Amino acid sequence: MDARDKFTLGLELPTDPRWVNIAEKNIRAILVDHAYCEQKAASSCISLIVAYPEKDKLVEVLTPVVAEEWSHFERVMQALRKRGYSLDRPRKDVYVERLFQVSRKGGSRTEQLLEKLLMNALIEARSCERFKLLWKHIPDPELSEFYYELMVSEAGHYRNFLQLAKEYIPADDVMQRWRELLQEEALIMQQLDVRDDRMH
Ligand SMILES: [Fe+2]
Ligand SMILES: [Fe+2]
Image (tube, rainbow, N blue to C red; front, side, top):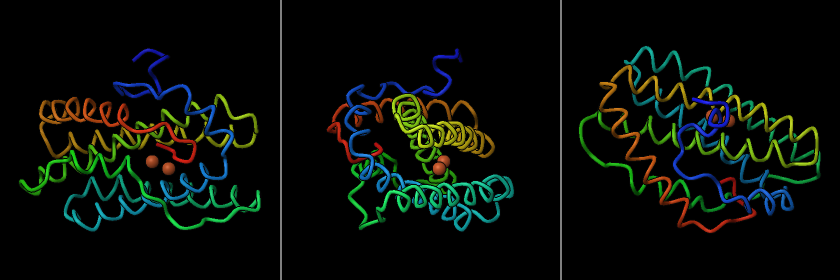
């Protein structure tokens, strides 16, 4: 992995460069959407721990990730409050809905685990790539620093999910499905509108 790719994590399609320019002008909506992303990240880890309690490594690795995602949520809420904004009602998350549509349904419990871990890894990878853009382009130094920190943190989570997949499923199978999903994700990104009020 060279330095340039360090925080794009194998994604097939870089974010449309227009996104960060319009997003930075609508930071309120971006913060609200981001708060929900952190909430969903925490709840997704809890769901995995609840669904696979016998998988020691998964429970061990994901328990601190829940706390970390929840602290991200808390910090985004602080950033909102500081600006006089509030959380507001959740919006439709088309990106995650579209990803869910391409995830394989059914199969064995282990096959389902692979799908879930890789979906989480994908969302972490894309979030990380977007935080990198926000870090570099947001003029507010405090927010920019926060996004840098999140970029590093979500890159760690991405690695956690991929490593966990390899813990329970043969590495070749993991990487084959991962490459398929990277392509699906790129297609989804290509088809989605570039929006100023969404993290993805
Ligand atoms: Fe997070
Ligand atoms: Fe994360």
